[in-house]
Image (cartoon, rainbow, N blue to C red):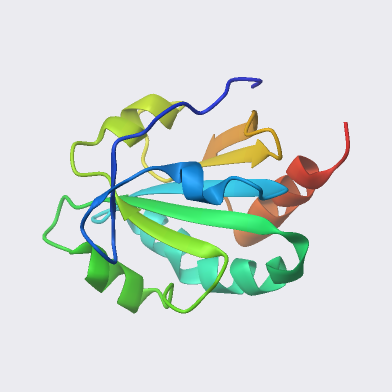
Length: 145
């Protein structure tokens, strides 16, 4: 922990243009979730992301889904399937080369979650978290030092 998330080469799901996480600057905490589209644990986490987003909507928390297509699921399909559109605190990106996953993973398992504080410093990393664990880590990232 304590590492800063540097530049990541991403693609905006809406526009298909190159993107960075800089648009999330100003959030009090950030949850970055990296998903491989074939992964059952990733699909499970994606399935509760909308609930987490609603639960933290008034806490200035940004949520970034960064997905890597390894089974023919487009970014748009991912966003629609898991009801991630229309949530003001959620951004969906594609990781076309897998570089973001390589940079942020803490093991070779898929479904990593990375939590950042307001200074964009990593407060926690883990793979395959439950909804309650995600909410706990968001609250920890929001806690004053």
